[in-house]
Length: 131
Image 1 (cartoon, rainbow, N blue to C red):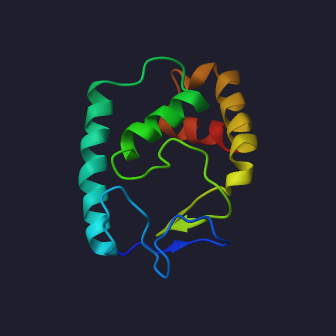
Image 2 (cartoon, rainbow, N blue to C red):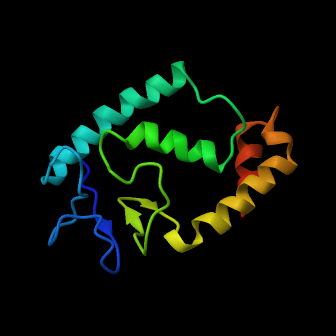
């Protein structure tokens, strides 16, 4: 099983002290057990969203709602803008908290200019949302 290392700077309080395990609502302090729980819970939440999608424009507010639905059973901060310098999880690199609003405004502005990407192929969508 792939182990996720959470790399962050400062004292944002996302991980249990002295570990790289995210503080979670389940109280899991073993990284492998947390990875399994997260995959199982988020898989069910993604299926739920597939069957009952968020209605409305794809905008930052609805993106936060989607994030909250997917991760709310796991983390207190689900759907909220990240604090501090929390940077990566495994192979995923995240935007620093202080730049999220600025970058999402640019991305969603680009999406809006392109008729919310309606009718575009996947590769075209990816190209249009790049900063």
